[in-house]
Image (cartoon, rainbow, N blue to C red; front, side, top):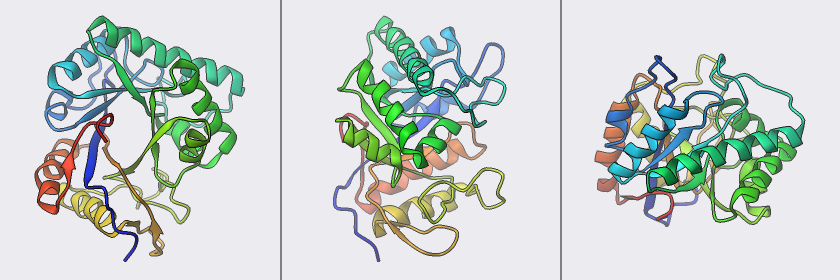
Length: 260
């Protein structure tokens, strides 16, 4: 057994607002009824101004806290392709995206409370401290009260805390892990956890045991505060519903990220 989780408050989040123009991604209407917090695409990997505004409007109506979900400038690749950008340029891009979502949220009487990097940007920053520090600087430059939602055991957690940000550590309901705590690449056959029941078992084991079991079979101690269900997955709604229904029976109270 690992380090048992002592804080029974837990957050359920999803990446939403990832449609673009006439192209629809995921079932946001259903997910907004199930999650506590939404990571809203900011136009660089998905989303557009109207999608962003409608998404924050729905989030506010549903009582779901709003987070910015910035990425590399990669609409064609959905933000999942690695990019080598000058750090100063990337920092400016992140500030731009967070600020855009803040404007949309304020136009609807809401506010952005957290930031969660997307896709390849997140994966690279999880293992590259300089990149992680760039993300943290961008968040702090916009507003030091913003919470950084970062994968557990990552360099993003380290950089955020070193940069004076409040950090919430997340785990992924539908993804498998490597020995260093990073996600198994999507190109690997074991990258995804399929089916709502399997995702619930995966999440519950991590929260109750206080440890992640990578595909190698070893264990890593972790204190997770938030669970992510990827909104674009085929099992997203079923997984989110099962987690919301079953975790309270295990002694967990689901709350928004600011309420953690």
